[in-house]
Image (cartoon, rainbow, N blue to C red; front, side):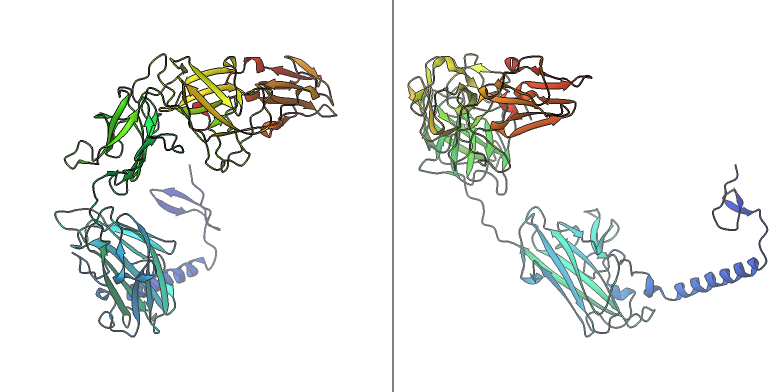
Length: 584
């Protein structure tokens, strides 16, 4: 099928890649075409005769810094005027605002490198920069251009036969007009000490005469050494409170099998390393993390977090009661393995401690049944908490509660509730002892390493305010410290009770209780819109056809007659798995 040209005045077929004219040309067209052809020919001759005026205005070819590297040239190969750096101008190289010659790099860090060029005779200025290891065979780290420059690479320039690979240069994207210019590059130093690094830069100060003559070329080469780093010493566990219970705030120098614990000191990991482990990655927690392990009585402990001065681990289940030894091994099971000093850590069958979600205020780690945190409103940045209500059931978290009836192996994370083997426990909130019937669950917290969960119904007669909270297991009391904020009782009597399949008319409302928290459903005066609100949580959902707050056991919809029907599932509501909520 013929393809139409959109050039005004022409119509043609595309045949074998050529356009064939079909409509006769107008008078004078042939003369105009001839003039156009002559102009194109003259333009081609002009461009060919003045390569320096246009050839590198959009960036220089690779390998023009003159840094003395294999295969490297200098801009004087094309631009003739005088020897490099013989003009009246200057070039300087700054790293982090200081002279490059005075700078020492830290492996892996990223810094700003600035090339400054000035020449009073220049009309336009361009540049190129590269960073190499001392022999010039490979890149020294990496360089990245800003919006005014671009990266060029070459595998054929600047490489040695024994180390092939692409070499990086940064050059101008468009030459800067004027007698001075400043080019900024981001340089990331090598990941490890690469010895002396050579950063070379060159610039052309073109005089704008339309030829490659009379231009000035400037170059600079900086030798940048690595920061002198002292050899890393052996790991050391602190002599005082070097190993403590994993609640951290109590500084208890006693732990229990399956409980969390913390070791404090220095040089625990290879310098610059730190690592966390998430239970989602594998079934069990590892005993080596970032090359570091912790031995308790010669048994490798499951690790949650390792850093230079702190390691969070689980006491192995096989460690017997009594005085245990703890030591840290860096480069564990490698030829370069180094060991810390050995310290003692007392082990008991149980050592309960409640965890805290914040230190100021010292709020106990706890969740409402909907998974939101218990505590003052602004307790956690970006997360809105709320007080517990009398009659509400909350989940509190701790460690060291003892063995589960269905045992967990060392490092194993429970995927379901596993109650304690012991039945000798009690919970106190303030001066009130919680009735045993209101302790709904105590055992392993699914999804957490070494963490226990405690589901407790808040006594209905408990006054509002801040209360101390503790747990006692097998006659061992948890350390003092955690606090629980209790609010006012839910005002459930102010509206009729919602029941399943209740019909709510325009202007009416009803309320239901979800685990001691009021959920109120209200229809506006016109019956067009309805809202479900949980005042204690500052949660509200509205809609003109349906509303749902599944977390709080209520949903509603409007039928074709405009009647709102409420469905209550509060009686079926269960406490969400702690692993889906806030991590203690």
